[in-house]
Amino acid sequence: GSIKMTMGIIFHIAEIELKNSNLAGAHIKHLN
Image (cartoon, rainbow, N blue to C red; front, top):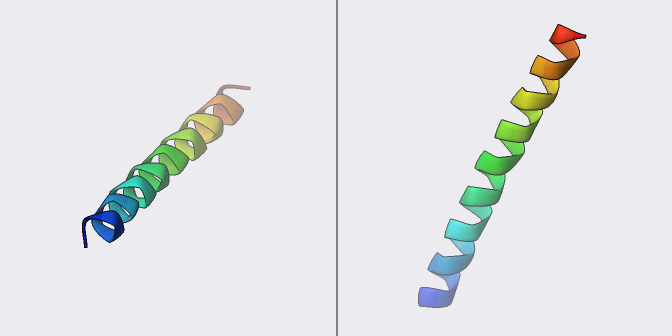
């Protein structure tokens, strides 16, 4: 149903945000 689809989108966005924050964190560590 639509609820499952919405949850899937939320988790997908959360996964992208997590990857972006990890990349940013690694980049900051590299600069330091």
